[in-house]
Length: 273
Image 1: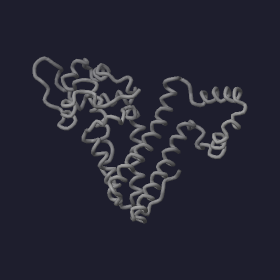
Image 2: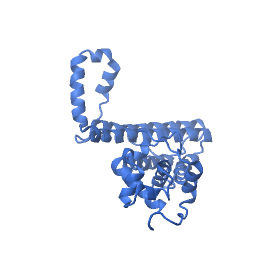
Image 3: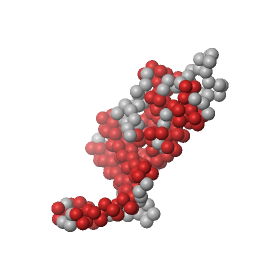
Image 4: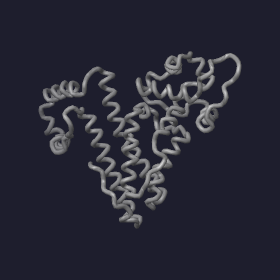
């Protein structure tokens, strides 16, 4: 499922994101002890454990021992809650990276941190990038990445493209891995069993496959995904895509630096790929 951020009331959402919780109204309502922070943390716990499909004001309320109606005093609705969850989770990421070992090493650390973050919170990958949350932690995370790229001396237009490429590689590979794990839980069928059934049928129904699709056959033969026997194929492929894709993007940044006359500005090596 895809969830679009920024679907709630703009003023209320931005107020909660940037100024924090306001004093709840007096009179009839929830018992003391509930807060925006507690609601958001609990919602993140629900999404981490059960995915975005299980997220609802009722589910969060049940974990807190309250009714869904009690939550509305603090958070207007699920749309605003998603914005708050997304931005709050991003606070886990570092606010900056040291480039003492070169921009390449710093960007590799950023990518690894982002990769691990998405695997801790795979529901974040279901929140579309088409509508940003525009919260303080979202900008803080972007500032950390820009801090490394800006120090390379690249002009703004190339920095923007580098941000997009780096984010796409990390997020795309993490999404593949997250979905491969989700597929097992959702279907009850392991990846190995799924491939065994489909591969057998393909072999029987398409005996001339290699002749019909020679480049696909060449790729499978020349660059087979390797790894530990207990790691599913797609999960290993996603990890290799992350490492290899990152290396290619970093090589591209190095080439851009050469083109801008900043060659040799970094002495770091590429990650494996």
